[in-house]
Image (cartoon, rainbow, N blue to C red):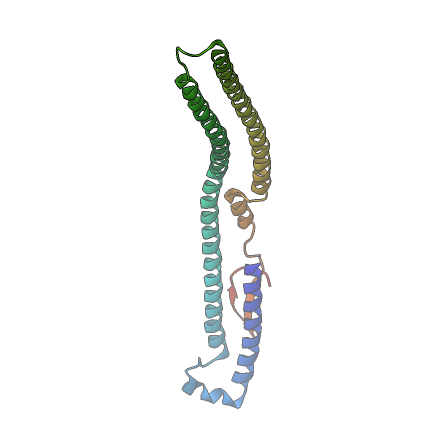
Length: 230
């Protein structure tokens, strides 16, 4: 984890720096410390360096805590969006299915309007041909044509009605099937997501361990680095 990695780095830094410092203060070069603004003794240097390491550890702890809080906040926003996601997806699905159904109905209606217009034109032609001077045969022929026109118009109306019923039935079945598939996929995807409460609970179990870092100089023991796993 992040905290264990930071503590491991601090441990290594503590050990390496202590070895270097002990070697430096034991050597003849320790007389240069006054020019390098170094503490007069190894114990003083160890105390100063450990305070720095403690500061680094505290910065890492605050960074991790802030990151967790931001993650929980982001997940809370995501949860709110996820709550509205099903309604949005289903609403979009309904609009899409409705638009496709209206397009199909519009096609049937357009074809029916063309048939009605053609039938009305034929009716006007038949009406104009009506005269008092028409013989029986001519009148019978005209009457037969008009009856055929009416039969064709009735047949066209019935066909259009049946076609509309069939299209609505098919589109309804497709809507139910596609909506069930959409809901199933949505539930599967939501099951794979962690809720903020679950994430926060998991994060609360990740904390610094009970191990301590101690910088020792010979028989002297320095301050302890705050809890963490080595």
